[in-house]
Image (cartoon, rainbow, N blue to C red; front, side, top):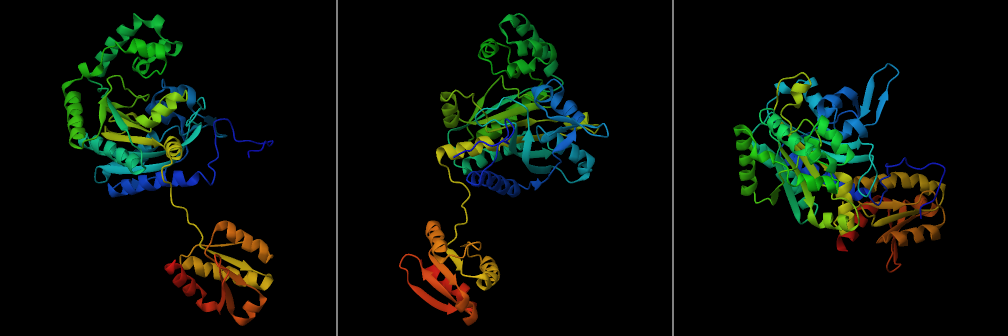
Length: 434
């Protein structure tokens, strides 16, 4: 039962308790296995980055930069931000460490916490975790399809079903300006029907209006011009190629002509992956539909940081959303190590001998539990019963002096004394028979 105390986790932050850890471990385990199979290498970037990194990359007019970043000023006057996403930091590391000179494509993956100041709700926190895949130096739509396939496989391996991939192309610097003019003209004639945020977005970045989740704005959006009707030849070829790759892999996708994602650096492909089964439950509970995975292509990001143009593609899994879905549907988590043996000791000398004996069982990879802080045999046997171990080892003063140990079979109560040096092998032999 939860108890109130003077100190509690900050609003929107949450503890990941021991019973929840296996779900998180499973997400990271499956993600890393897939990433390493496809030749991705792990990278870790600082939680704190220069504020300008996100203002230039993520976009000064995005909700992330305008409303959601945790920022601070150092004693030296530097403006820093807790990372709200991984991609700008990984792109910065790619540029800073000369990865442009490595054989390409450079494939990187990262995991860890990110921070956004937003309204907390189910599966949405101010500190949450992501699993990221990023590929630099490959402009073919084949890499777009491969990364989408990897994320889809990751969710499938975690036992999610009824998955749907939503994809769109948002063009590039050649075709997007003309489309933005068409879009702005359309929304200006209907701006009285837009929410206050979208009226502001209309002046700053009209594409962000398409990303609004307000119902009245979505009604206006439904008749807006579609960017796929105004792509340049290069973007059209790239998008057609992506759809052909997705068709070839038999991945279930839906073309959403109004999907833009909320980040300024995206070019061409953007995508999101949903579990329709989970989304239905969320909507029934009054929670807006949330993507489990999202990402896209960002061919111009490195150029914004002073480098040359490097084609790139990436995406991220929202770990909290996935872990919550796994728990809700009873999907398997990481198999916890369950002790099958308990070590009970009686007195100071047996305690000292127990420490070395426990290490011998660890080296033999035989899970063992103990209660070194207790001396009562009854209390220790009660603990062994609760853990449902098959055997309890009893080590008292006499056993230490005789270099022996008692093996007690918990279901029958039968006991046998064996030499201490044989106990590990004896337990291994007995466990194999069960």
